[in-house]
Length: 260
Length: 106
Image (cartoon, rainbow over all chains, first blue to last red; front, side, top):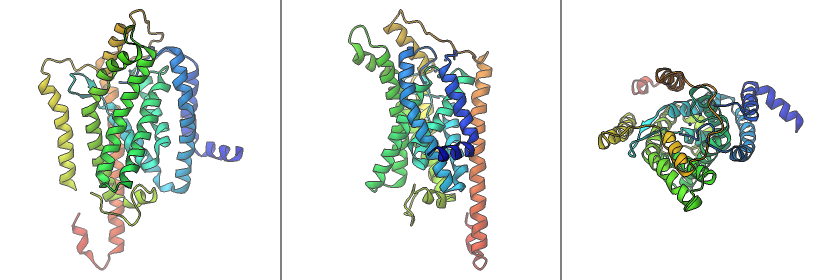
């Protein structure tokens, strides 16, 4: 057990250092600001609660990534693509029908390719970058934001994709629904998190939830659709040019079915 | 596949432009800013207990960083797609020395 941990740490030193820095920052309440929850706007006890809840997913994700790379060293670059996709999409603040802006998350693709917990790690790194350099999100709510965007989002995406595969829907539909619902649910969770921390004086949790859902979730609907479409675009390109690796990761069935 | 992808991207653009048309006067601020307001409304006594220790000094610098973020990500994705496309084509070339007809297709 210890040996395998050691081996894993050596192999992924860079990733480990990134995570170590993250935990150090998390434990020392340095100040930072957020489509996610903003710095200082989540009471400390909730920051800790979501942070602690998120840590196991990061640990499992870390191990899952090193297992995947062990098995298929070739897919390292594809892993980079998953991270890069989340990176690009979370930089795109897009106007929405509510008259405000929000951004996609880009975690659905990676969840489909590498499983949900691998995306927890990558999503957390993206959030950390935005918290540190862009005052977007924040360090204190990093646990909460990671939980919504990099735990719930990818899990929803992953299971929606698997379900669609079981139901034999066309691959593109599975990818679309997975990415779109993963995105939408991320912000539903953000709304829950804020409503739990800030129940309304009149109406309590439920009234707050409606309010935050109105802000986050409704804004997010068209963006979820956009994210679904963009994920299908990239997925199409990957299937055309790199079917073999997708089959190795058992993303698509091995004697390849027709994918559009 | 190329036409399909172009249609999909066009749909994304439409989805982004449509709100601009129906809300001509809207501010299009961030949803997070609105959440801040909602919190202040729900709990007027709540004081944010932390401040960002570094904020981009201006909107320009913030957009620089966002553009950089998108450029790095998109650059890598483009590099990767070019890489796998080239790899696939060279494999095809090796595989079909006899039948060169298939090459001109893509």
